[in-house]
Length: 177
Picture 1 (tube, rainbow, N blue to C red):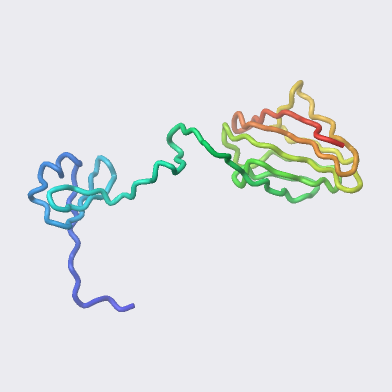
Picture 2 (cartoon, one colour):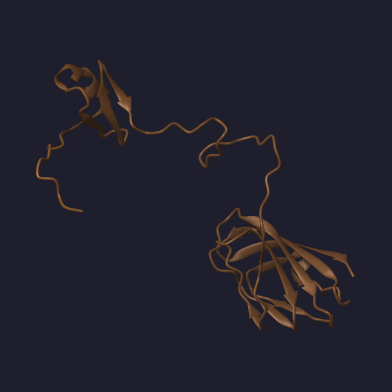
């Protein structure tokens, strides 16, 4: 697209919000103002500075405030790719399922963030009797990794919470076999 021949230069008033507000008479109608102390843009409309930042509806979830949810919150269950060594990426999900096609090692996950929690469902394939070894970050009660249910199609559950970059507190539940 060609550059228009007639252009209007853009003026931006800069300063703290209180300084901009105190010199509002010197700002032209429609002029853009940048409040350096708020890192926000304003536009002069009439005799006031109006924020250009869209306000979020009160019903939107935010990450910087405690909130009470009045409806169910759901997370997807991400399928881990079976292989001799399985390395979960904790940046992709909180809940996982893995169908064991052989004896497997569940390696230390990548992208650990303290406070993240979730579940991993371990499903025996049609053969069953699969075992799991665990990376050093997985901390099981009593210091011993669990023995999985062995019947074909049985499901066990590992609940976890990341405590630090090298420690994942885990709880084992044999769901059914």
